[in-house]
Length: 402
Image 1: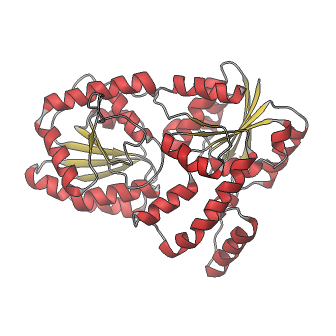
Image 2: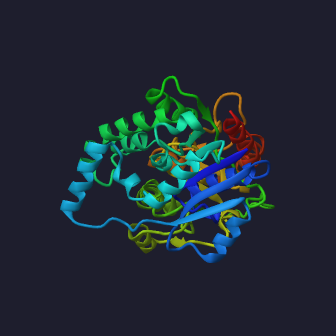
Image 3: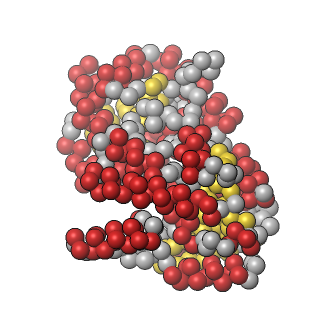
């Protein structure tokens, strides 16, 4: 089968972020049995070595330059909003749209070169034309609902611009309702995502394929380091991650340090914004930026904190910590899609949503090495049974085959 995968985000190395790791591991699996052409965009920080490395995993790599970021003042923003209002496509999607990339895709599709086209992340839906579904199987791999995420940020009061997002919310709903109808098959990461998208496309074929973990990249640690070392991992220009670490450092960490003065908190991830960098002014906080190996920081930590207050889908950071054998304390959002503390399952993580719940859970784990060992063992077992990229790739292949 000839597969065309569209990803405006350059998916290598997979350590760059959640979008990259999912796209890379799915294409890595598909290329075993199929001819995979990947069409993507090169961003400023993508190196020639990374391009050469990615070529090894696909039959054909087609790269376009990422369009320059849109800048401008109030008038420019008004123009973008008017376009959104009239055309129905959000600025965040239009900003990455490449006419050259569109021409290449449209010409290839009209010539019948591919059996299936997959859009890796919903922003790539823009390249699928309404009549494409009649000529080729079309799949959209929705990493998370933009409408659901915007609504959630408004509900939890972490929106960057409440006024703007309240106006955009019904427009985003209209947008997702429209694009979902263009696809033969829709893929989501959790049952909650499926319920959200089902509202837009009640008759559509929607398959849940959770994220996975590369168990070689995230091996199970050989020993518990003990101590009072906390870690958070993730791209630090992501709004949900920024909110998560700011909440934890400002509200939870100082209370923990009253009883455990040696407690440290490592914020590990690429592209930290100024608000995150400023957290280093707090005692015990380190912001690393991009690191060569995320797992090294996990293995040195006592507990991994997943203090998310927004964001749909299974969190890669949670699965990676579990695979590495690091006990997790996470919120409902951080543990979404995972059976970690429900009836008739072994305890695999501790749940916390409020300041007091975080304090209680972290203190309990600091004081109880046996509980840490229990969580570590059961969490790794869960990942091995249900959340490997091998199983995700197998399911994705079936979706592509139809």
